[in-house]
Image (tube, rainbow, N blue to C red; front, side, top):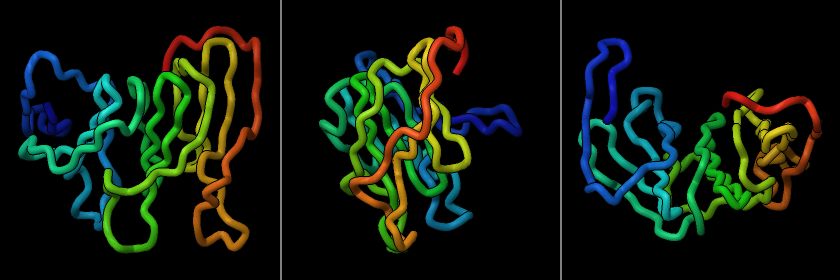
Length: 171
């Protein structure tokens, strides 16, 4: 279901059967401001990704095998979507150029982060903070190239790590 949080009423509802379960979802960044909240990416327990039109519930794109296991987190950072599965595979989806909005047909940049992440949050639009229990790590998934114009495909890395700070209890 998609809800209008101002009015408190459902905007749309789509049923796909009892065996379909969405593990993570996120509104994708729009190409234009009036397109905000029109499309949602949904991750299924099989690792498959769907793009759903929010108002009608129609699946507009699908990508089988995007992940090999369940996607636990789907995060939006500016015009990017980051999908993270339970094995620690982070896929960074970003728009190359100004040709349109994000698409599941694009090839994401791949990163490795710790497996079995308990909580994940985007900080300062480009940092990914992850907790695996007693450890918090900070990553830069999409490091910029030297010119600063484009994403460095081989970039990314750990900014810092703090252990034994206590258990993560909320995400």
